Image (cartoon, rainbow, N blue to C red; front, side):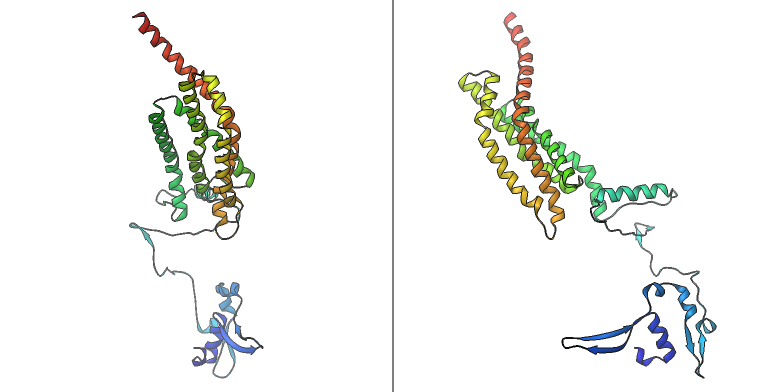
Length: 312
């Protein structure tokens, strides 16, 4: 296009555009020489004051003599709307090692410090909106999953006490997941929360193995609660260790993997590995204690009822 413009116009086009002025070739490729003004000067309207055009007699005339420009009264080509209200979208990128939750908190704090008028409404969209919505629904999902697991275990053991013993293994898994994420330098985000939900299904098998063996020993061998749970901890230690190691070794590649998308999988891997390691150590000690405490509570409630029947 520059070849069809007069020389003065080609000079203006070169300043605020690009124009090939030469080319040179090497043994492997051909390179084009592009002439343009520095990008910072292209975005500054004061640069127009430095331009000049060549008159018919060959003299240079400042561009401001033959043209006027202003930024007053300018308007956008189009106006975006959200619903029936005009809207402006501001995008942002996360800095390295910065979680989306921290970024949204900083943005909300900055908006509140601006003291916007009541007619100005702000909201997140895209990934930030999905993250904010998940924070409100995930606690309800975890609670619902715990309720469902409690009901299933209650139907399985026909008891309201034994499911609590099995679910008591979950806090140690959550503690281990949080410690692993903190040591690795990851925030407790959405992916880490998914890892905690997975731990609910993996870790409770430790309690199921102990409680199921203890109940069977009480019924078939006539052992006391203390003898039955101690025997269960001794006899089921090897299966518990083997199943935990199988799940733990499966999570190590997620935690230590590299490459495309590794930063998304690593919090999941660290949450699983940390939760399994801590739960493996603690559940063998805490589960028998909680089993005996709840068993005493159950027997304490049953004794008055038996006394009333005997008196009658």
